[in-house]
Length: 222
Image (tube, rainbow, N blue to C red; front, top):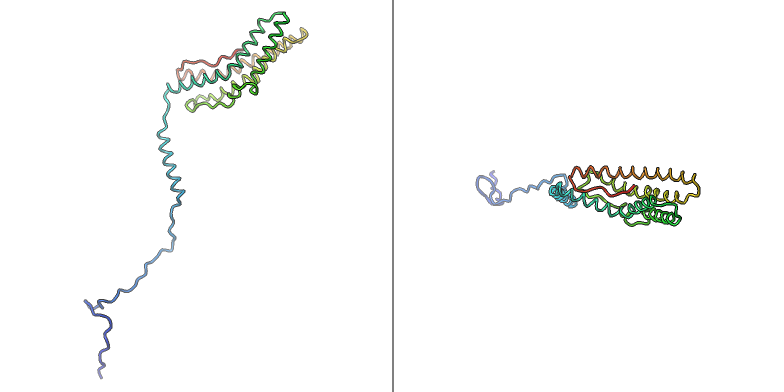
């Protein structure tokens, strides 16, 4: 017995398929790995590094003439900061050479020496105090002039302080033996002072020569 054809579902279409039927659903496959976004701070850091690299490339390298000018400015600053202490040392030694046996002259020289010694102490002299905080400009870094700044501070205190204190002490001596002992101490203090001046002058003279700068080290008596 022939079975009657069943009902036709859907719509017929071309090429033996079932035209008009929806295509089978295929879900989109997702990766098992989470998608990471670059943190904003990383992007900012990269941008800053790039800007820094550009700025470094644009840094101006000073010419020899500019460095010579910087050196003269440095030496002007050094002279300004040390001059009041150095002036006192010069006055003390000059008064010592000129002092005779007159009691009044001797007392004047003692006063000059004591005042000069006090003026070389950083606590009593703003210029020496400023010198302790001084920063050498970058253009002169290769000459290591920081040692000059430190050397000048040491030349003032304790070296110049000791010299002037010894002048006052020697002139105050009450006996020839004490005077001779104090004179020996003064001579030793002067040798130390002059050795410190030589240590200050050496790097300055090297920088002056290298830059052909028309300048000279600070005037330091001794």
